Image (cartoon, rainbow, N blue to C red; front, side, top):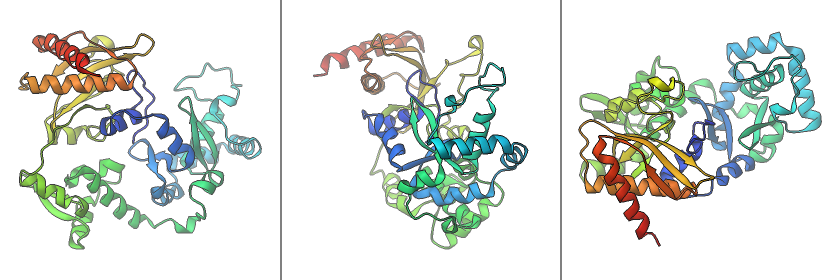
Amino acid sequence: MQIDSISVVARSPYLVLWSRLGSYEPRWLDELLAEGALFEYWSHAACFIPIEDYGLYRRLMLEEGEKTVAWMQAHPDALQHVMGHVRESGAVRSAEFARRDGKAGGWWEWKPEKRALEHLFAAGELMISRRENFHRVYDLRERVLKHALPGWEDSLAPMEQEVRWALALKAVRALGVAAARWVPDYFRTPKKGVAALLEELADEGALLRAAIEDEPAYVHPDNAGMAEKILSGGSRSSVTTLLSPFDPVVWDRARALDLFGFEYRIEVYTPAARRRYGYYSLPILHQGALVGRLDAKAHRKQGLFEVKAIHLEPGVQISDELLTGIAGALLRCAGWHSTPEVVVRRSDPPELAGPLQGAVGERTASLP
């Protein structure tokens, strides 16, 4: 699950879980990290990853990227200072190191200790033991693994080719049905040779061959039963929910366009006057289709869940079923945030806002 700190609705990893689980306690994710059931590392981005996959990523850590190696070689004093502090004082946040270079700080002006922490994290010498107010707490790898993965030795890390095979299988399993060009983005693995790798896995029976229209595709054996059920018409999605901009359904923008006809970009870094859909628009998944997006903000102190704007995709018809589905998703999301009042400001098409606000009110009135 991709980690992102924007909390205008909910921080992305928590929202990804809500989209699948419904109302749950966000602290459970924090507890799983602190307990060692999850660890943090770079995957397709900074992610929470199951500890069972640590060996795969440890191989990537041992290979160390060129930028990390170059920085560490150029700044041995900063590394020694940070590692010594963590060894002697225990787990640490970046904020615990005082800035001494006179700079103001900010995203592009990390202090030397913050850079050292991040490069030591990338190299795997430090891990994230927990988060405090969503800030990383760094500790020595051996201390984190002592209870998270006792008995670990680097000799257990699989070789690079085994890692490629394992990540390819995991990607196809997660994607459900996958064209070769979609597979590398899931874990940001090399694109070169992926088609041959998937064919090799299919030859060995580790993957099943399929097709998306006329394009070769692959299905993991674990998903074969579900795929057959869907193809025979025995299963149909009935879910309506809201997705994080970094949800696995849409984080590969090219796949979202290919599979759903849904052109999506996040406009957080777009100047306000040039935004088309809003600061942090949430894709709307309705019965297996991406039917629109909405720009929302949870006003927690006021108990208000504000939909600044909702936009339906071209060709999506307003129906009672659609209104009921979206209204239910809004109320569930708002209830999870403890912001029970839902307000819909405007919509495209304009005739959607009124009926949707009415459907929200009707659903609210029917709640026990």
